[in-house]
Image 1 (tube, rainbow, N blue to C red):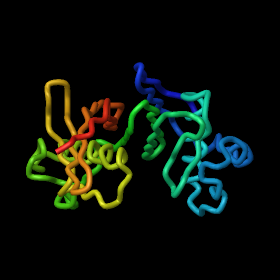
Image 2 (cartoon, rainbow, N blue to C red):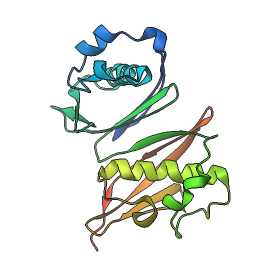
Image 3 (cartoon, rainbow, N blue to C red):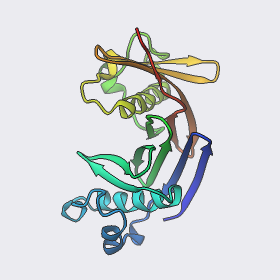
Length: 205
């Protein structure tokens, strides 16, 4: 399970990890960060078990303090004033640990989300949905916004908007109960798009 890359600045750190099922160790997985998906051995999906183990291993590379736990299936760091978000697809896991509410998402460039674009496209988005690569970029960045708030009443097509700006992209959440915005960085990694937020700004309307 090699660590591929670490990206960092004073307010966040991101790690990317390549998952290998041949290195999965269920005993070790139960020992490190035991309160992160402590029911993992009950999962029937073997790949999900490998992902949990890889997440724990990557967390150890990024953070020497605090303990990774999950509460209502949401990752948190105990005993450390940091926020965390986790994403995985195929054999890749990525984590962001930040000083602010954060989200991260990784998607295959080949994924076709055109059949569900009505569920996440907003008329004010940077793309009208005619270009498949722009569609998956839009989806990826909206996943970031959703993970920042972790509120299942947020609707991708009604409450979330992605626009281009001079440094990349801006994301906006306009929910009836709350409103925030974030600058979002979108990078290409092999055949994937990786998106994460650089900040978190509460909007007081």
